[in-house]
Image (tube, rainbow, N blue to C red):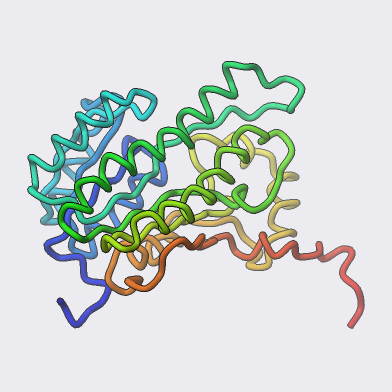
Length: 264
């Protein structure tokens, strides 16, 4: 084992949902720490530019098709990943979706799409990869949650339910697989601008309101997650499992807005 507990040289990581957004930042962070990458998307062709970027960092990379709502697709991805590299050491379970709506407007289809992707998909990807990790006696699974795993927000009922489920699922899987050398943790970002929510950040009044509630006084930047994902994927976290690591600038503390803070 390297003296650098954060060194991922020789490790192979699957990062799901890497055609855009935070998934690409997670993959870059792992690659810079030394890991080789399995990249996934529902459309394999969309990964070509990013695969080239990872290879330019000096890492090996393969792109695989994955639809987390299709169990057959999940099994094919896991099998192909293992065939490509021989062993999978790390899984970052990032693929997800959202449909932002008032609760009264959420349809049956909305609910199923979000829960099937974010919760059911997370479980069955973890299951398929964990089978292979357990056979080798080693694994690091990082499920991607959200600040909505621990706090409720209007317009995000099914999304919050799915992310809260991911947090609970993480604890259960950690107990299931801990004796096999596999840790399972949840990385929960706060408010980060992504393709899913970029329309919100075009509203200055909303951004000002948000920043006022974040103790760090700014929304998250993608690189704010780099250290956390490398930590949970590395030997540095070998005795950490079943935990939810919030990287949210402190918004989950329920900080009082500056305009109504009590005098000291």
